[in-house]
Length: 373
Image (cartoon, rainbow, N blue to C red; front, top):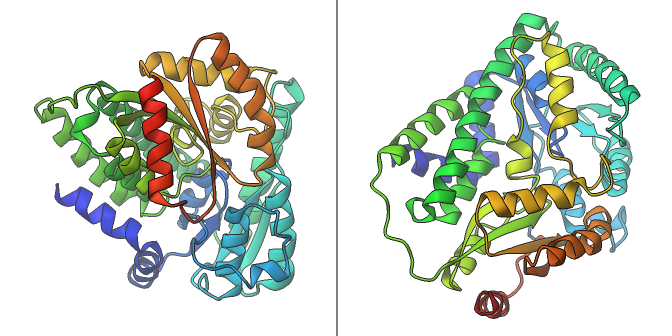
């Protein structure tokens, strides 16, 4: 598929794509750091929202500002900024999330120049009436601050158009998840990962066009021959920056049929009501979407959602990709594990860093887990 090949090329060198895109389109580029960033407003304002993934290269500049027990994602992003690799950014948006990203925002403001800097202080507890009112006010303020920074007035008409684009993308991604869950062999895990990552990098209108073509071709494709005995797995965690993980799982007798990732289904879940006033529709979606561990919505919501995902995808087990020193996910893991065990759902915990552990070591652990299933 030509479009898939194009998306994979973009993902292999996203900054080269963004530099070229910015030069050709004249659009501004706004970096963001979390799936709670209200990027519908960024796209509505005529700028390209770009998710920051950090680097797996050697980190040394960031270590002068951040302690070694800060996660490699935050340290890697700061490393790229300090090394001047992100000079194409016109601005950055920091949603209120974990402690490390909040401190990264402070360090960024003091050390990185030539960009506008906006903090979006989202509510942490989401299941209260006041959270809805507060989030709406925060998004209204963000609309004004972003508009001032970009020199544009973000109207409801512009927001409504952006909402339609994002809704179309999210519906197609949901279809893609469903197609892969029913027939995982039609698309490799690495290719699937490339499509998901491209959604956070590329011009959203062009990505929508490419995604529509890819999904259309996959719908018409003949069912691929199933791999005999492959165990169906759901992966859970924060950021998955390693397409190799999918290859290793597939080479170990497993296949990923679902996920609970902020660079996966959590990012796409939730359709906005196009009949509502745009900002109210965006507010509702960010309150109703699947939460991450830095947010609170009832005590067992995350565990219950993961169990629903396992049942819906008919998975045999769950693999937790725990980013080392990620406190929110580490705090959630024990009780979620207990909930899975109560439902007799096996799980495997893997500590991850920006740099992938030795392949042989990972493959041995996956093979052992698959044999247990």
